Image (cartoon, rainbow, N blue to C red; front, side):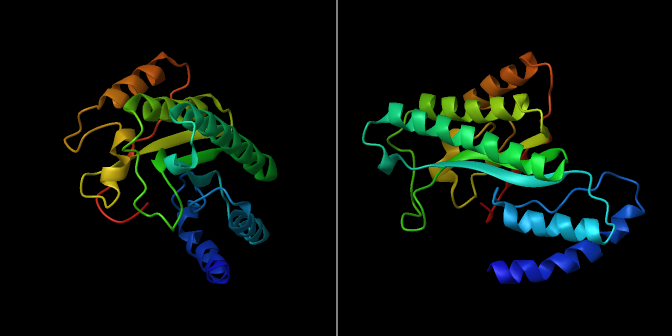
Length: 207
């Protein structure tokens, strides 16, 4: 998989030349996680070939598996706090390596027990816990100086993972804010730096 991705890097760099003529900010392709190897290779080749890159784009998801926490929801919240702190460290390290602002083009929390348990869900976890974890992540996006923009991901009802992840949705299919969405909207409105982009949503496939 990594070899195949690396073969695409020269094609991506060459294909981005057309963007130079548009006189708009140019971002990297959005990496699906915060593992630095692919992004390092892409940005190094871009620099070597004189391709302008103004910001680095990444996806950030905090995956939590209720199966792993015998202590219940308190353990889950503590694990989420540790993972959000890890995300902070990874984003800061990415910025330190390349000196560019970061656009988080998809972000949210999701149930994740690994490939052995694809149907992982939060059926045993209260909405208040899911909401608290999501708020931790949004606060990080609002407060972290290296993050210039971010876009929450929302699971449409036709998405294969909707049933497992719906508690983390910020709005309904019709565009109305969920209770969590209202809470996040107030959090963002109270801040001094609003960085939220038009939020992401996929009907099928994807994450």
